[in-house]
Length: 109
Image (cartoon, rainbow, N blue to C red):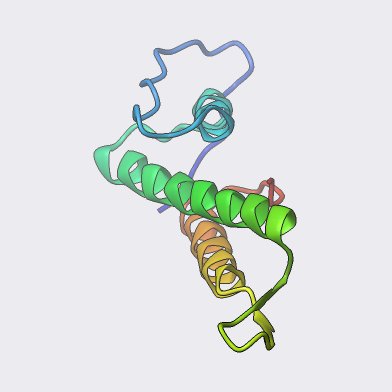
């Protein structure tokens, strides 16, 4: 699957972002669809899934930032925050989706 940059003068209707995406991911959706030609159903579905992963990683990061990278278990022992693994996996899914879509953009948070 390849994505092609849109010529600067080309204007087309950009499909709205799925309703469950939050504002940060909705902006990424709009920015990517304005810059790249992703107009087939498969590309749009993959973009949706990719941004869902981005949203999950961002939410995990926000929670980890608020609660810390280590948490205490019921015995009072420090353990890694379980959301660290969820964030890592969601970030990997986001980056994999971006690679599959052949989008040359940096990782955003």
